[in-house]
Image (cartoon, rainbow, N blue to C red; front, side, top):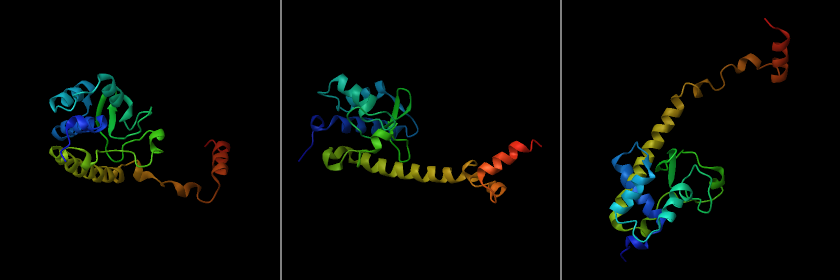
Length: 170
C-alpha cells in the first residue's frame, strides 16, 4: 500500500520537513518560516491550514514547551522561534514526561518509503550526539568536582559545621 503525503499526520509531515533540513544542516535550528517553506517544497503542506501548522510548531510537537493538547517530543526550541529535531537528553517539559511513550519520530509504516532514509539517518545522528554528550558530561570540570571537599565535614553534621564557621570568624 502506497502512502500519500496528504494521508500523513501533520506531526509526521512537519518532522519530515525538519529532518530534511536537519540532515543538511545538523547543527542548526530553523525558523518556523523555513520549516513552512520546506513543507511546501516537499509537497507535505498540501491541505493543511496555516493555523494547524502554527499550533504544531508552537506547542504540540515542542518537547521543552508546556503542552496544550499534543504531548509529542518531536522538536526542540533551541532559541525563541527556532526549532530543531529533538535529541536524546534534551529537556522535556514536566507535563510532557507524564505521557508514556510520547512520540519522537514518525512510525516507519506510516510514512512513504521515500522518507525512510530520514528515520535511518536520525537514529544514527541521535546515537552519535548521545555518545558525544555522555563524553562531554563526564569531562565537564564542574561535574568532576562532585564530592570534592566532603572530607571537610565528614566527621560532623552539616548544621554543626555551619554553626562552627559562624562562631569562628577567622
